[in-house]
Amino acid sequence: MPFAHITGWGMYVPEPILTNDDISKLVDTNDQWIRERTGIRERHIARENEFPSTMGVEAAIKALQVANLAPTDLDLIICTSSSPEYIFPATACIIQDQIGATKAGAFDLQAACTGFIFATNMGAQAIRSGSVKNVLIVGTEVLSRFVNWKDRNTCILFGDGAGAFVLQASEEPGGVMSAVMHSDGSGADSLIIPAGGSHHPATEATLREGRHFMQMDGKEVFRFATRVMGRAVTEALEQVKMTTDDVQWIIPHQANYRIIETAAKHLKMPLDKFVINVERYGNTSTASIPIATVEALQASRIKPKDKIVFVGFGGGLTWGAMVVEWTGPLPVKKHVHPAQYRLFARLRSFVRRAIRFIEGFFSRKEL
Ligand code: ACO
Image (cartoon, rainbow, N blue to C red; front, side, top):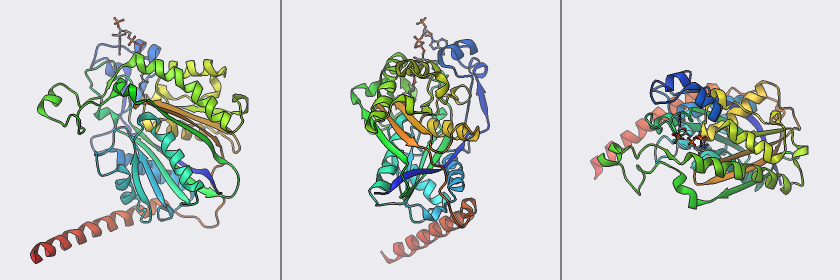
């Protein structure tokens, strides 16, 4: 049975930065309150012409570059987002088209902020089953468009960004070692965008009442998160007969510094074993774990053979954890340049759209 290794990683955050002081001009809050209650100092906000797909593409190309894998080598793309481009089509399909991953099946997976752990596990399981070899996982968010900028309970928390992993099959032991995935739909109301779906389709009234924006019971989510994070880590470690002593790094979902601090206490682990960057990005939902991983790698904190636990929680409610033995890129003979495929991808996409238009034109004439 092949092992699923993380061989590529990439991140992208939009340039514009929104500081706590900027937010204090929009709602009744202040920098000190936000820093003390959340640990967040600033977050990045997408420009008007940036979308989950465009940011996901940037992160994906970087991840493919690290893995030295051509987009055409991908068998599967799983995108996970709490702020997808559309209800359908899947953001994964738009990314597939834009990077030129001509052979890949692509779909979206929705598990709110736990999405990246669920998606990475699904990709790894597809590799373990032998049905695919190369998988791209993308977590990408423009949550700033689903946040009510008049609601101080939520607008201080979230930021935009994208992160990606490449998973590859190898006979060499290592990579994804175990994972646990949990859900509790009885807490669905705690974190919800109530309108815009088929339960409450968008109407003038839903817009007027701001029900197309995220709503959150912050205290409830806080209690839930602190309860499940430590438990999920322990469970994932037990599956591979390991304890926290065997672990070099915990990379948690970056929602709130205090939640991470409480998880560290539950696990009786020093906080310096946790990768934390929530202060500069806020909560980027599905993108927060890959962004934290990329930054830890760039700072040379993660070394090959390190045991890492990813742990996350979010709307649904969902939570999960994953134990990984870090590998890094697999050895390769020839070098590929994934970014160069983009131009061809755009050209091919344009030609396909043109052909579809011409086919439609003639078939209308035939009818
Ligand atoms: N600025 C100033 N005061 C504020 C603000 C603000 N931005 N927000 C709330 N307050 C006030 C409240 O009105 C309240 O005032 P009161 O005592 O007069 O009623 C007081 O501050 C305390 O409010 P709490 O809600 O008790 O504040 P708390 O310490 O719980 O912090 C927070 C709120 C930061 C939202 C916290 O509950 C939290 O982080 N929860 C988890 C949220 C989370 O992680 N969500 C993402 C999940 S992942 C996903 O799937 C998207």
